[in-house]
Amino acid sequence: MESILTRLAACEGFDWDNGNRSKNQEQHGVACAEAEEIFFTRPLYLLEDNRHSGSEERLHAFGVTSSARPLALTFTIRGKRIRIISARDQNRKEMKQYGFQRA
Image (cartoon, rainbow, N blue to C red):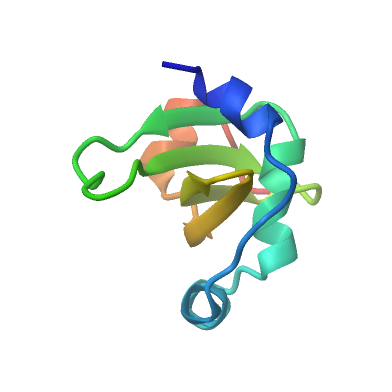
């Protein structure tokens, strides 16, 4: 199986579901463009979400935005597009585990 990084490198953009787009903004204060930023900053930690991967593979990404906001994303890769399902601030446990701090 191809690595997650290899598959991400082949992606050509993002695919947003209208429901997830508004949910992330309204519930978590994370705009689409801000969520997308973590794929272009380092460090970026990626994990498979085997527990929630049913009909399609789900993945988690932990990283920071260009303004150093630590975010946690759940996403999938559909064809050559990244589809972000959920975007929120990292909790304290995640920030400690991955070495991020609030700006």
